[in-house]
Length: 137
Image (cartoon, rainbow, N blue to C red; front, side):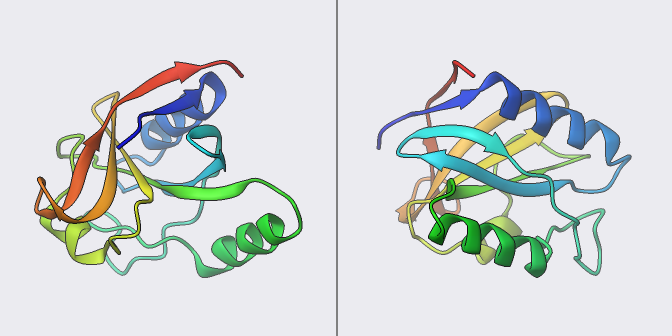
């Protein structure tokens, strides 16, 4: 699977949102084109237990899909934080993920890691690690 580039701004946005979430899981969308993440939106986490799960606000998703259909940035994947875990997918993440090849970025303890949601992945049978680098803004 090809690696991805993440703009400095998107990288900083995810780390800052994770810090600001104060023990809750922060979340949002990865936006861009091809394998270039140009932006990271921050969405409300509407999960019933936001300290241990995330659910992106459906209204946020709807706006992003409409924007993409209108020529805006494509939704390349999702990001969320693990405030008391590791920067790797959990079994809960695997149960939520469709094997559609989208990128999942996970922030934990100031670190970020990327994975692709795939069938028969090496992590929980649903994710494969994805190389990433900071790209230009």
